[in-house]
Amino acid sequence: MYQAKLFNLFLLKEFCTDNFGQHYPRDIIYLILSVKIKTIRISCGQSQTFISRNNTIYAAGSNLDGRLGLGDCIDKLNMVKFEKKDIKKIVCGGFHTVALSFNPNKICVWGYNNKGQLGLGHTVNEKIPKEVILPEKIKSVSCGREHTIVLAESGAYYGFGDNRYFQLGLGDTNNKLLPTKNSSVNFKKIYSGHSFNFAKTICGQIYSWGSNRDGQLGLGNYTSYVTPQKCNLSNVISISCGVHHAGALLYSGKVYTWGKNCYGKLGHNTNVLSMTEIDIQNIMSLKCGSDSTIFLDKFGDVYICGRLSIMYNLIPIKLAVSRITKCILGNEYCLLLKYDDSCYVFGHNESGQLGLGDTVNQLCPKQLIF
Image (cartoon, rainbow, N blue to C red; front, side, top):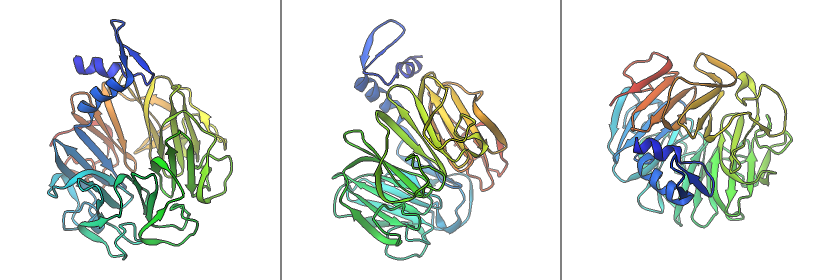
């Protein structure tokens, strides 16, 4: 009950109010919630899943090209232990994986490497983690389908991998086999989609670059950009990028989506080029997938629009789950984390990415026990 009560306090304002009318500063609530929620980390790619629980990492799903980093290419239908110890956080690309290390200058990389997205100077796939050392401290990592962006503590970033659609933002279209620095920016956070990116500065300004054939850069046109461009978007808490669409959550509580609207994944059943507000309330986070968008509200309820597995919804509908604290989307599959750290999965499962021991698609959320 105490954990659920804390969750309900999370209102994303300067102050929050509980059922007794007491006020809690936002930063204190963030801190309290982070102790609970961040005990489990989840990352999903095209069809590979990683779950970190109590400092132990588990992996399941497609292991084609070694994307699970287990030393073989055999799919894993159940969650299996990932033995490498010096990993702090895992981030999945489409078919490759990047991990932050406890060494502040190091990342570990493995999986598919056809465009150099592992940053190792070659295009050979890697079935076990390989180290990449950068000349400065690393803040975060984000991955697209075949590209990787490493944000440095300085605010500059390093891009490598596929650059056919300008997704590295380096002023050219050449693929990069090694981390290549863009020192002309000062970013606080970077969000990567299929072949495009968004970034947030320390002052809250939003920039985007890369592929824009479906208007996914939010710039009001269909022009792809080779360098970061400033967006007309402010007061943003977070952004999520899918394959051809993206969405943003604002401090005001408003939610906007833009880009390609196939299967109704923008949540407003219209085809417009500009960023459009969704009629949905009390949202705490959103995640954009390949053909769907999922929303989590402050009460722990989950809404979904678009196509996920065989579900197809033009506007957000509420799922039959409750008391959820976190939602993670892969390619047409989803993991839900509840307040008690139990995990539920549903969607496509052709490679065992749900970790349930089979390859049967799940229409309804099913508890994952491991």
